[in-house]
Length: 140
Ligand code: IDP
Ligand code: MG
Image (cartoon, rainbow, N blue to C red; front, side, top):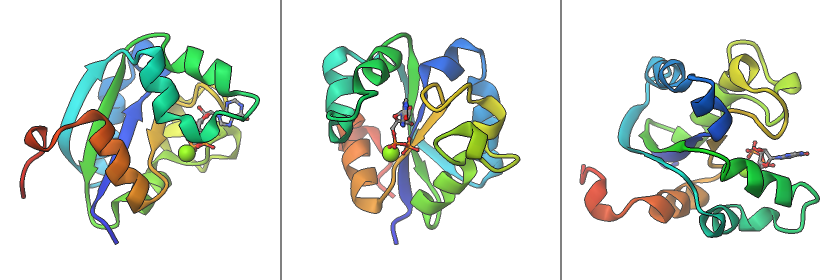
């Protein structure tokens, strides 16, 4: 089981001024922030990042949303990081998210759902590498 995961504080949450509150949740949940960057995704980056969803009906809207403003990309570390972060963020649709999860408290709807979390160790590695080079990550 890996100890790293990848997160995004999505454009809706950055725009709403919730970045600091979500950082608090990250720290409270016991994660170390290994790397973080505020950036605006290009259309190409967003399409590449979400390539697995390219045939879904919501893909176009998702790309438009994810490129609509700045977001914060983060590499996080904790034991069992992928599962722990998914639990901290809650279900994709905030209507289904448990109390005290980030999506329950900050998401607007199933698309504008405040945060991203990797769904497997393999994808966590790929997603971290999509945004951060080795020299930008602590070596231990
Ligand atoms: P996840 O972010 O919880 O892993 P995924 O199924 O991987 O959920 O979907 C990726 C992102 O696509 C979601 O976080 C959300 O922003 C968007 N999305 C997922 N399902 C829908 C939908 O049914 N309508 C609109 N947007 C969706
Ligand atoms: Mg996903």
